[in-house]
Length: 149
Image (cartoon, rainbow, N blue to C red):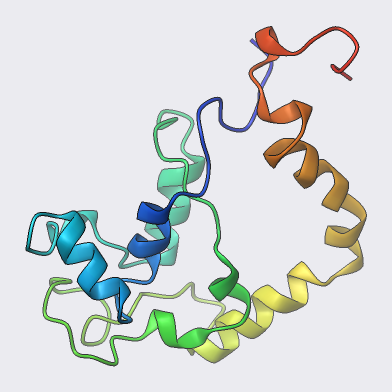
């Protein structure tokens, strides 16, 4: 089968809550979603690298998380400003572990934003739109002959 993005779904409220767990009201929404308690620390958003690896791993087609707008404009979601004691022994006091190329959440968000607004990304944006909302969002066997490119 030719490669395609995700054959089932994309951004859901649960994924947004997962990324924004360090900020209210998302902390409380996460607790409600998990039956009144935090999920196991190994299943929480604790590291950009481990999240990326899980999503792009060829053997893990079940992880369909996408970047949310906060990755480009809101460094606060990467800090555990409310000192939530649910993340285990990762990061600094429950902060998200950033890639080596970013020393602070502000730098991480600024670099992401520069990449998003770059000529390369702008020149490929139509492909992303097709992938998320258009004909490429369907598995190849569901694409009609007139839509498949």
